[in-house]
Figure 1 (cartoon, helix red, strand yellow):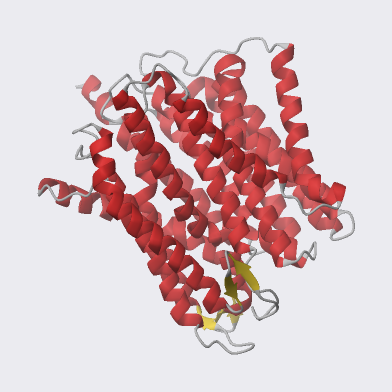
Figure 2 (spheres, one colour):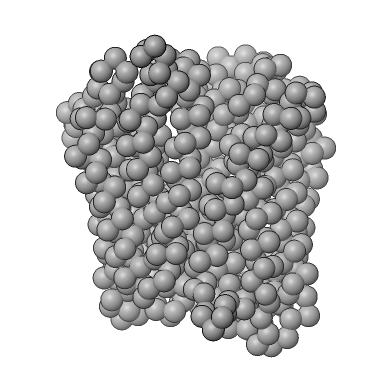
Length: 502
């Protein structure tokens, strides 16, 4: 009877990791919610420059887990990687606090130091805490799926509370709160890891620590130096060249060339890998539009959205809490919907679900475009239009986001699984960088009318035209992916990739 109870419940270690991850996400999303407003209001940057920096920062955050995962596997082990990562991220947030305290005179250099520490710290932290969730359970344990669902709730809980806390105070205190949140998670992890991070047989989980060699220490220091240099490049050399774009997009082009040059790939493996690369390409358009949340849509919330409720003006960053709240509320409903369709053999395939996700992102922008059409100088739209956009985008996210990683793990040849997972992260890095580039196109100024921009010959003179760009881009991507989906399904060569109830 006792044994059965163990098998149906979850180990305490899951809730321990949930708590640690919740505070890390509190720190990350709290800082992200106020970051672009901080750059434009305190460091007095132009919208376009702030957007590009935002894209570079969030793009690099998705690249460093490749380095962190490699060093963890080789030398550091999961636990030490999490401690190093958490410490670096807390230090980074404190640098942001000092940057906000100093302001426009000298604050920019402190910001670069803060961003570098957060980016590198994230690389050590992010890939390791998730893998430890899986290690708490025996192989093929049916509870793993629900464990990750619980863990995912922790992520969204942290993401929900942080904009409400960090956005309700002065920028410097917001960054300080993010740093303190990270320290709470880190101290809890250090104190409780021996007690809670054990398998059900009582064995300690996590990769062992090996002695760091000189090469690896040089790799860590070199990576910190390279990221600091890349973030600083424009300012250092008074240049307009965005080397981070070349770095991220160059890696996106190099990865398929590297993988397809492998002579050992069979025809079926080649076709499956082609599916991963094509879907990764479409994912860039999804996240490029979705991730406006922390960039142009935050500027829009700040300047053109009516946020007064009973005489109290709601901070613009509070809108960042709509998405995680909607995820927590809607994820169980989406699971029921897919289960209902699966039972009737009507569940869409992974490529079709992704096409639906892209279509929903386009629909969200249709809503906001209707709201801003003909918006006069100094006029504002009701906050419900923006909340509606975020809810529609969340349903799109739930169609697309959970599928990606599981699809890569199912389709990638075992010997290339880490490399293909890296490619998926690379697509997310490219998407976030692209999001910053697109956000930079927002018509400048407090009223959204100052100065026209253009994208591939498409002139943007007002907010309506700005949002139309996202409708065209994500709508076209959705249509193309939907048309291609049957062709992609054949190349997946697996009757069981779809239709397995989650």
